[in-house]
Image (cartoon, rainbow, N blue to C red; front, side, top):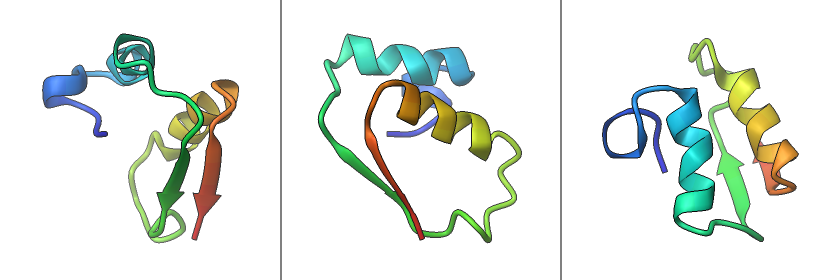
Length: 58
């Protein structure tokens, strides 16, 4: 699942895809989280946690 393109051009599009595709009860592994310079990474983690998804940052 990505941000931009097919899933929407902003964070609202990213959040909406969970409802559209019925995503639930998954574990997300973000293995370069600490090295990533993606400025919205903390917002993405918040969205995942708000949806009660398992998030593993490594």
